[in-house]
Every structure is written in C-alpha cells, then in structure tokens.
Image (cartoon, rainbow, N blue to C red; front, side, top):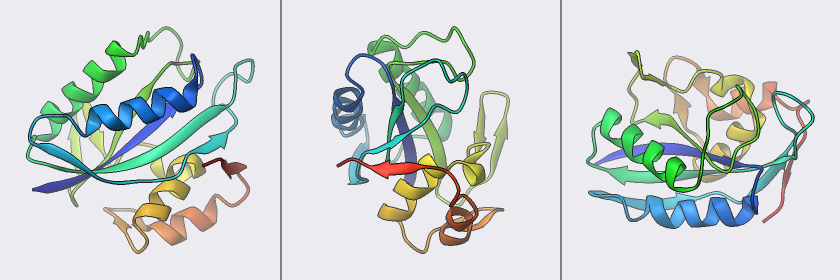
Length: 159
C-alpha cells in the first residue's frame, strides 16, 4: 500500500458539505481507504478576490492505485460534484489535488507530484502538518519548515 495525500477545497454550493462528502467518497475508491483527515480550514481565495472564501482540508489515503489511476478517480469525484473548469483559480464546487504520492517525485504531462505550489500554500500546509507532523515533502523539505514560511497567510481552523 502507498500513502497519498489529497488536498480538498470548495467555495461553492455548501463547501463544508462538499468536503465532507468527498472524504466519504475517497474512502470508497477501489483498493483505497481513508486513513486520516484534517480539520476543515477557511482561507481567502488565491486567485480572483470576487469569490467566496474557501474551505480546505487534507486527507491521507492508503491505496494500491497507480498515480494516474488515482488522479482519474479524483477527477471523476470532482465531476460528480459539478466541477466545471472555466477560470484558473476561480470558484469551484470541489477541487481535489494529489499532493503527495509516497515519497515519489512525478513529472508527467497530466500530473506533477509534489503538487506545484504546495510549499507556498498555507491552506494546504497547515492541514497537512496537522495530520502528518514530521512529514518531509520530497525535494522541498520538512512540513514544519515549509509551513513556518507561510505564517503570513491567514488560514483559520473551522472544525
């Protein structure tokens, strides 16, 4: 089994419910089970500011799915939640990002792991640090060090 970390985000159509339902759906993926989940966190949008704040979380999965098969499953869940990719960093019902896949560094046309930008996003680092203290992000360093660099970003635990 491989452990993979998934970033979850939503700012449309009852975001907290979207995240909680998606966590249940992650636990139902083939050859996969949900082993840990973070609290929910609120953060300002990264892109255009004329959209609602986001609700974010991180889930740890144990899986036998290959990285691209897991990505396909994540995108299927997004689609089932009504995800429409219209605007880069725009509002969304659900965003599922494959953040880490074991200690692998993957660079393929459809997938980059660790997720690009992970080291600059407190809304990913704080929940990740909550469920995996001591984690080392391949090629980037310790989660605590990365998180400390983002202390100026406002992320608030809501659950």
